[in-house]
Image 1 (cartoon, helix red, strand yellow):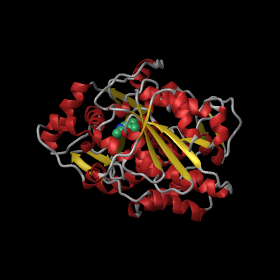
Image 2 (cartoon, protein in one colour):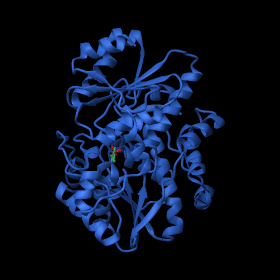
Image 3 (cartoon, rainbow, N blue to C red):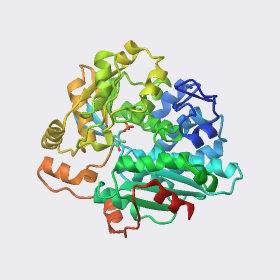
Image 4 (cartoon, rainbow, N blue to C red):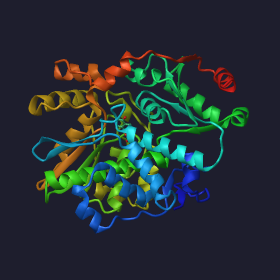
Length: 434
Ligand SMILES: *Cc1c(COP(=O)(O)O)cnc(C)c1O
């Protein structure tokens, strides 16, 4: 399968090239040339299949031409070491819990899958040089990438994060790992971290000295595997809400997660329509209302993993539907909630259903509750475990909540990090010594 760039100015790429480069040379995002629908026999049997079995069938449709079946099987089964159950919250409203992975957030699947695919291609290329992954994080991405790549042979990860700007729980998830993970604590803000990463990729000396790559969320190996979640969710819904029209609601920031679900729909997934739930960063919502896409600077909110002012995967959505605004509008609706609505929603859902939402899931739950029509059943994604946002959630529900063992374990570890200024010369000097 070949991959084309959404900007249309770059040559077609192989899977290996698309995964290794991340972004296309024309700065566009890679898209698979074909989308293969799954056969009706698959849809008839899916309710009796496991998460891994379902994911393997989906992975074969994406990557089966490029990776031998046995290797792809290993990558998929090694990635999915956890479940993603659909849980009933109230009448007709279900949640797809995407937080049972190693860092308790939905990015775990993409990060683990990408790490394993990159490891596979590195072995294949007979290149014995170490591959160095640079990732800038404001919290969640760093933990998912660090844990996803932990122990993967031949790959070293540098996580750059802004000093004092990530929560203690988040910091512990990437500073306590050791092995092939180095945390770099930058005396600056997230944008400084991102600038250091970008400058590194452009620096001649550094690129001559070491092989550098990014684990950015636009990478096809991180983004496409998220579709696994939606196939497994629909399989579970056949049992939980048979015969009802399905609506899928995804709390969205960069729109990678929802775009993977839209790919699923093109492959035959029985979903009637989608809702993209935004926090106060309402660029996509405004696009749906007006047909105009106006990126803005991001605003800080309680659902901070969705604080995105220019969603990178918007280009993929346009490409998927040939820029057809009416078609996009008929398939996806939007919603936007500010911080006080998020707090109120967490509080009310807990009072009504005894279910604890995180700030991102709260946007999803509310959008679904307000948007569901007669005869429909809906699933919203819980994209992170509420304990990752402990102080916000406890304030909303007015009571203490327990922290899952896995999070508590991270917090017991010893923090190891390299202190760094925000000057590129310092970061470069550090990397040149590695
Ligand atoms: C990354 C993230 C999102 C947004 O996902 P996109 O794919 O960027 O739309 C939502 N919730 C949480 C908890 C996240 O970490």
